[in-house]
Image 1 (cartoon, rainbow, N blue to C red):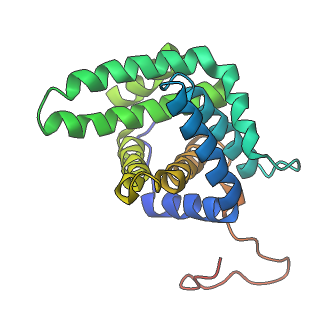
Image 2: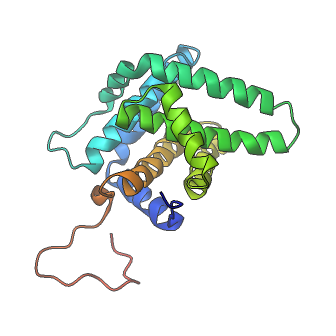
Length: 213
């Protein structure tokens, strides 16, 4: 398989439009995931964010039954694999954190690997170990550089909410997940049509500089 090429700006735009169209529900879903994850000392954080990925998949696929914020609890079906993945990545990040500067930068890439692996767990029903092997295998063959960098950038965007006394995380975390889910569907599925503007039949598409969404 050839190296995966990616238009990062386009994928971020798709993620933003998906988030914008479902903002209220996604913020509530992110709030539930974050609060419950914190109350359980992180034990349920991974499974609930897996549930958020399930919600995004339904939105992208235009599921006629609109998902609700409470659907994040469906991620509990992935409890064991999400927990195993979280423990492995936490251990790696803990070791890297001992290395000044470079270790923290490398932790961003670990976060990206974790997110891509989580999507394989949720969308492909792989185990945590198999998902990590697949991601590192693609990296080793030089096929996954751009998606890895994209995941790191999405992670940075997700973490920007900390600057607003932490409250902004309820906004930025779901947004970053939207970007990652759209990127996943672009690379592995049929794209992220739900995040694209609908053009009525018979009307020509807008010019490239038309910013109406």
